[in-house]
Image (tube, rainbow, N blue to C red; front, side):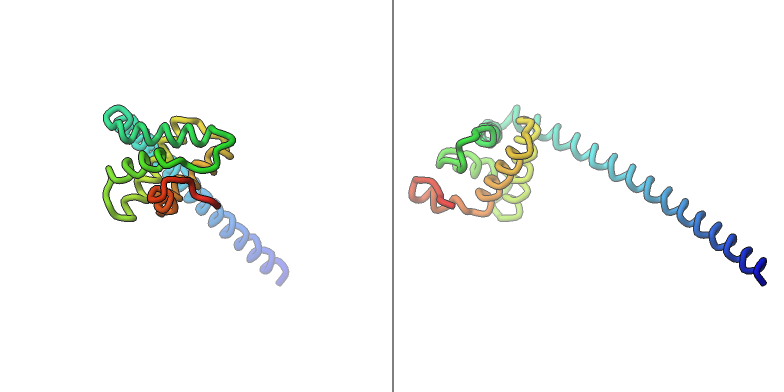
Length: 149
């Protein structure tokens, strides 16, 4: 009875080990596939960013506004002119909220790539680009002065 139990345990351990090996192989394959996809998407974004920076003055101006803003340690908000430039770049992609969100993401990624931001700069730039996309600066533009937190 003990030897039969021992054989069953060995058999179960073997099945478990083969299942774990199979799962690990699947996981490694999926991880590789996703990493390749991320690299490919980054390459596409880089190419599109390059083309837009070369061909669109509006987009180039907006990217440089975000880069300068993120690097300025003392500035906590975009000024009216910067908001206007960013909104013009967002409008290149469409007029609806979904298009503006996608354009805001693209603008942020391009600026992050161009500026080589550290963590603080990434957070600052992302937050303020999202504020422009969400319309938190709309009142500022109407009144002509900065938004308070």
